[in-house]
Amino acid sequence: MNFFKKNLTDITIFILLQYIFMAVVLMYLYNGGNVVDAHSKEYVWNINLLNDLGRTIFYNGQKNIFWLYYSLSLFLIGIGIMLFFYLISRLIQSYRLRNLIMIFGGISGLGYMIMAFSPININPVLNLAASKVGLFAFILAIFVLNLFLDKDKYRFLYYNILIFNTLLIIALFYQSFMLEFNKPDFIIKYRAVMQKIIVFFQLVFASFVLYYIKKRKLYF
Image (cartoon, rainbow, N blue to C red; front, side):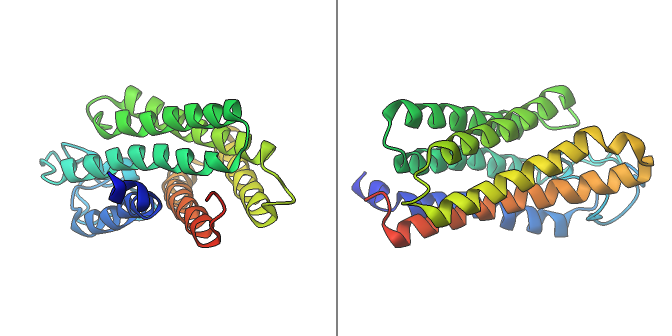
């Protein structure tokens, strides 16, 4: 238990970044086609979604023997997000605000956990709903943190978190309200690319924040 508490930040960073490693490996092994070409033998970066890695049955009808690895990796992300918000909430003095951040963080993590074991080909409604809940709860938790973070004491973190959240909201706004004016092939490619950028950047940024906090010993 003492080892866990002492190394909680490093453990959380590992949990967050392992997803990127696992996703890249599974992309390399992927041969299940996509929504445009069911018989494609490779993972197409600007067509396939991350969700495709967790399909139990591929587009071409073959079984995905690696889907459980993806689901476990995604489940760990849920745990990692909960731990992330537990750690960064310690930058806020108010216990009520800490609890609010951890509640939103818990909802976000739970969303990813639910998504992990509701593959897109089996339960697409639940998978997509859990994905949205996980992402928007993450944004809300970051927003509350940014709103009440001491700007003078944590200037570097304050502005970096503000920029991160602003860019994330702009990307989601464009995806939600502007894509209807574009052609279907553009929408498919945009969503496939932006999903990866958002998820990977989200995890890398969270890891960077934890690393910065640990190095500066800001919550000790």
